[in-house]
Amino acid sequence: MRVATWNVNSVKQRIPRLLPWLDERQPDVVCLQETKLSDAAFDEALGVDLAERGYEIAHVGQGQWNGVALLSRVGLDDVQRGFDGAPGYPDPDAPAEARAVSAQCGGIRIYSLYVPNGREPDSDHYRYKLEWLARLRDTVSAGVGADLAANTMLCGDMNIAPTDADVFDPAAYVGHTHVTEPERAALAGLESLGLHDVVRDRWPDDRVFSYWDYRAGMFHKDLGMRIDLILAGGDVAARAQAAWVDRKARKGTKPSDHAPVIVDLDEAPDGDIGPMVPPPSNPAKRGASKVKLPQSSE
Image (cartoon, rainbow, N blue to C red; front, side, top):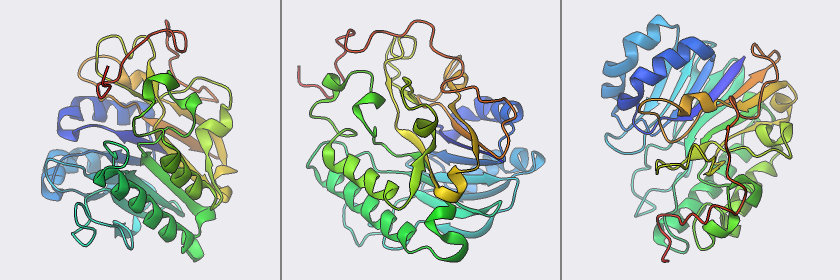
């Protein structure tokens, strides 16, 4: 079974890329983030094309912001929109944003997740991000039967780089979100439930990124970060035969700024081909680029 996750950064804009990618890679389960459509608009835009390819759909949208989807050719049972205790923003008691959907797919509880960005450390949005992750951990921890953590996959844009090895230059991220100790501790809290970062487990020492800013040169110089993750429970992770980033999908005309992450369970149709396919041809040396992030004060 091939499971993929992809932040498409507006699915309507990405349809000319998404449908050929589905035909090429043939994933059995696809987790999409930042669809930026209502449920009705998603179905209108893609329902027929996805049905023709054998996919059932579960989508949670809110119009021009956020939005997550699950596409499955191996069953889509016990669909859950959001998760218990998910806080709202800016008021925790407000309706939850469209950031999570899960279902039983091929006998595995699979989540498509779009974790809040956090914006700036110590901001209200940053605290919301940490609370959101804490409540997600509670939900996964409370799973029973077929929903045990060992039988779960958390897939999506986590908006956290797990370690300094997952950014092109740690110095460029000082004072920014995605790399702070509380965010990484929240991610580690999920992994403490027995979830495995399957890409990093398979490629512990390789330079692997899944997101590259649209600014000129960032992608071609491989100045990226790894924030799109698949965390798999122990029973599922033991089945992984390949885990890789489909960097090809980030190339060409009008791409998303994220690339899909793919995990093959039980068998790997393309072989063990990671960590990034194809690899970057001219990556800048670590720390040599002197790139300033958009939020930098200097």
